[in-house]
Amino acid sequence: MSIALQQPPTLVAPPPARTPLARLRWALADGWVMTKRNLAHVVRAPEEVVIYFTLPIMFVLVFGYVFGSGMALPGGGDYREFLLPGVFAMTMLYGLGATATGIAFDVDRGVVDRFRSMPMARSALVVGRSGADIVRALLEMTTLVVCGLLVGWQWRNGIGDALIAVGLILLLRFAITWIGIYLGLVVPNPDTVGVIVFPAAFPLTALSNVFVAPELMPGWMGAVSEWNPLSSTVAASRELFGNPGFGGDSWAAQHSLLLAVAWPLLILAIFVPLSIRRYQNLSR
Amino acid sequence: MTTNDAAIAAQGLRKRYGQSYALDGLDLTVERGVVHGLLGPNGAGKTTAVRILSTLLSFDEGSARVAGHDVVAEADEVRRRIGLTGQYAAVDETLSGRQNLVMFGRLYHLSPRQAKRRADELLEQFALTDAADRSGRTYSGGMRRRLDLAASLILAPEVLFLDEPTTGLDPRSRNDVWDAVRSLVAGGTTVLLTTQYLEEADQLAGRISVIDTGRVVAEGTADELKARIGGDRIEVVVRDAEQLGAAAAVVARIGTAEPELDADTRRVSAPVADRMAALTDAVRELQAAGVAAEDIGLRRPTLDEAFLHLTGHQATATEETAA
Ligand SMILES: Nc1ncnc2c1ncn2[C@@H]1O[C@H](COP(=O)(O)OP(=O)(O)OP(=O)(O)O)[C@@H](O)[C@H]1O
Ligand SMILES: [Mg+2]
Image (tube, rainbow over all chains, first blue to last red; front, side, top):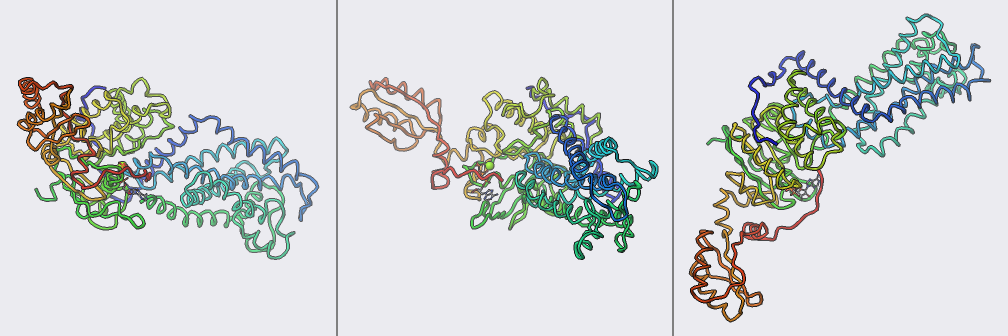
């Protein structure tokens, strides 16, 4: 190692951001650097990518074939076609575990000390986790759609509506990443957090319209299912895909499109600030 | 020097963990452009102090300013002006060395080109070019430390915190780190260096604060502290126990205090002021007195003796509680 630690004269850090807009730009830039860091991790552990594809493929095959026949729908129609938008959204929900485990690993690393001692945006680490998980969700979503098409599912209202439906499902996934981030920060133990996610996610799928139309459920269960955020996204995407099984008499079912946007935004409004605050106060 | 021009000014810092205080009223003033040593045994509170001053840790009482800014109220201003190499390497072990440095450069808002160029320079300076594109996981402990140090130097920091920077390094790497620290200070950086080694503080630090159980127990230049500890001792082992008295008479003339005798090991020792003069005098005078010496040597006080002297109790190894 040579002793000289000369400073190149041109090397000056830009002055700090002072206006709110400049701050936001910095926060986004820092978040993007952290997103790239997470993606670089994946490139260095390519075996992990296999998992990205396994779960969606398994879900479509298992649910599409095992449950795919012999179930009646209230308004008639093909059950597998009914089921697949639900499986899409459910797969996104199960991404909760990956996000929570991911952020728990992120903050478990010594490098976080360096991040916290640098003048970077306090939100960057959590934003980067969310960003990387959205990239992952895009891959998963593509896999889901391709597998769906292979087992006979299709969209019937044109590509535009289908893309909006995919967008709504990804919006839900985006909101879910922030629940996952909060969970991972509250239980910052990578080994435990993966385990607690399943009991949280499973009832949410069971008490939803993913497998069964809420009209066919007993009173209170039907009501809970209809107001379940997962159901709103699923119902809205069924409608946009032109798949059977959307609709119903309740207000929630009638306004599923509105709720499919409102629920994720509400979740984001709660969990983004909570997560950032939690991260800032971590290990202090 | 007012506390406002000081690089580091901390008053009465207290940090409590449960029932005990990791810092118990720490006062520390470090002027700009020097290396200041923070010397203390395991559990003394060195890491806690560094983490508080580098805005990583909150504290219960007291106040601290670093590079002219309050570590709590103006944490971001402080972060813009400091570098930190903690006790445990804070780099991303999955990424390569180059990826790490480019990432940190980007987080300092260097342009992509600047960040890349700075990474290349630092890799070169810290002899990591060959390993630049390997995952940090494959680095040896010393390489990881060097990468960590490089990461704190992407921008020349006003104040650099080094928490036991050479622990686990081989002598060559240790010298490299020392040289790097010296040239940084020549460029105007202030360095707060924690260490358990008197030798390291001696080599680098202009002033040293000895801390124990969370507060400063002694402060001064290395020479001042050594004078308080008692400095070097000359030690003579005679071949024949009967000559111990004659040897003691010689050592008494050379030393600055009454010699200590140990009949079992046929050893006589005393503190001395001038190392080399004492040694040559001893050899000559023992010969003149006809005393056959088996061993004549100079011994520096060990860290244990230093703590015994400065803190009045033995330096105890406490368990490592990783923060
Ligand atoms: N997170 C923590 N929870 C409880 N106690 C802690 C925590 N961090 C530090 N301590 C305690 O505070 C005291 C000071 O610890 P610190 O790490 O600052 O010592 P140190 O001087 O850096 O020691 P070492 O030479 O071993 O690195 C110790 O008694 C330690 O056990
Ligand atoms: Mg320490």
